[in-house]
Image 1 (cartoon, rainbow, N blue to C red):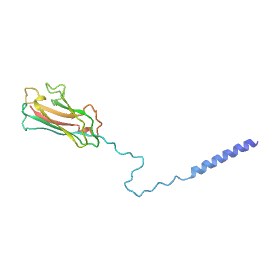
Image 2 (image 1 turned 180 degrees about the vertical axis):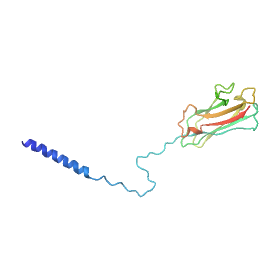
Image 3 (image 1 turned 90 degrees about the vertical axis):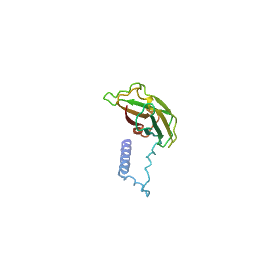
Image 4 (image 1 turned 120 degrees about the vertical axis):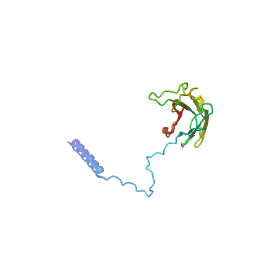
Length: 168
């Protein structure tokens, strides 16, 4: 009989202890006097490179296959240095099929060295490299694209290309 009473007493003691802890209010939230203090679980933003095509233009107003030069500038506008990657200059006929310009398949690829934050690299390329020998006064869309293979983690992939439309 004593064992049953001891068992009942232990159960009663455990339930009373549990009830006391359940009735305790949560500890008060820590007051802060700094308006810009971040919570302890927030992480700082990752530092990433951001390769951007910042310039894609011609050196002349009129298209001359033999004399026109394409001027391209790629810059790292991110917060970390970039790795080595490439730049592709693609020529497309802006039709429903989005075909490559005749003679421009595969599109030429140029090496881009690693870029420090705030630095860039310039390319000067003859237009004749991307257009067929004879033009039919067709519209052509030239596209400068950097890091098409996504080798570089990038803060913003939406600025990795620019388009230039010409009639040739």
